[in-house]
Image 1: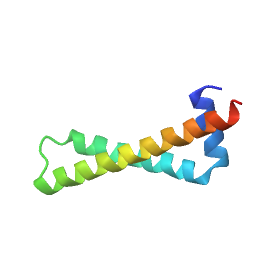
Image 2 (image 1 turned 45 degrees about the vertical axis):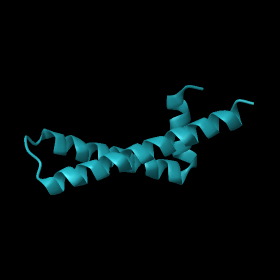
Image 3 (image 1 turned 90 degrees about the horizontal axis):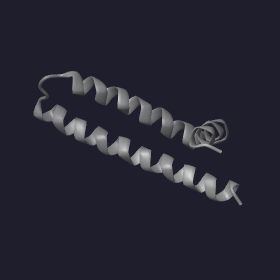
Length: 75
């Protein structure tokens, strides 16, 4: 099974996984909008760093769930 197929299977069967993916996508969109600005205020810089950390956390959790799926379904 490819990672894309695993992701689709997890989205269908795991509400937490689907929520993580949605939140990751939302944060990605917000960061893209921030990156379009030529200047960020100090508050916006702090918010951007916070969003980057939240996005990375979600990416790590998604990867962990994919690894667990592979471990449990490839035996």
